[in-house]
Image (cartoon, rainbow, N blue to C red; front, side):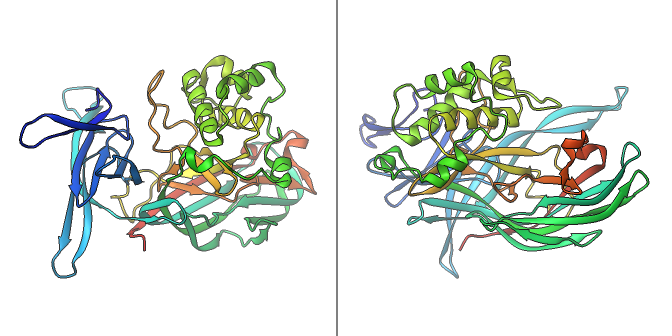
Length: 435
């Protein structure tokens, strides 16, 4: 039950309790049994778990493509003998209602939404992660040049990061929009589109950018603290690159240094340290949008932060504890996989974090979406997991950087927003099944 946080096992004949297992999630859970496995869905965790029927231990888990999974059922196609797991989803959906008895007539209401959809997944046991329902998506990023004031910039180079290949994302093709670009590849294989302008004035008008077709999957790692008891040390290169304050993280301030100590207390296991830091930040922050991002010391004092401010605090506390980590982003496709072949516009950009686990590699962790309740408990769906709708750009480089005659814009007191307006669009092309 959700109240007890346990899955109770009863004798079929006597009705007496035989044993119990701890529930894997924090929400309302539904169960089905298949052979020697217990399958559990959790509506808040947005996850389906495969448990050992005898011990209740998690064998693996996977994220669902839609929110609030409930009922589970396996179906075998007779002609192919292929087995598919079907999931029922049930939630309340906000929508705009046309009410003729009000002026203005449009009002927001909620309606029940219930449907069944197959959950496609594959567990890569040797790599300790699961991929589930993927989507082939077309993403377009375009800048519309329209300077706010008269300018006269010479030899302008406009760099925009391109989507990158990862365990859960595959770039199929990229093409230029408006004007051609040259592709720059750094030492780690990250790709950047470089657009060049001989001169740009207040009268310049054009659009430029790129269109990419990418495959996106939901990913969930199956690594436990026990797997992290004897990790190799962090390399000298990663210490120099990912433990420094290189992004206004306020790591030398008293409030951030004190928070870094309080967050992990006496914990020595690296995975638990990251989890404790996440809990510490969630306990002290609530989500709120701001027009600009403050440094971690200011955001922590205020107690309210955007995704970027959550991320800044998570980065600062992690790095002060010797945990290599970095920023990842940059956009989320609107979460409507049923709406295929129509333009979908994201409301804003988004950033999250990756932390480095020696011997395993880079693991994802969301910045703020799991901070659902004041004081917890918090779901773990996006701790070592990331949903299909996250589009990852080149890592370890700024998403956009503009220079004029080799000088960054900020050094001449100018911002990208003063020169152009960006446009971001997604089109979901088709659903994919992991092989």
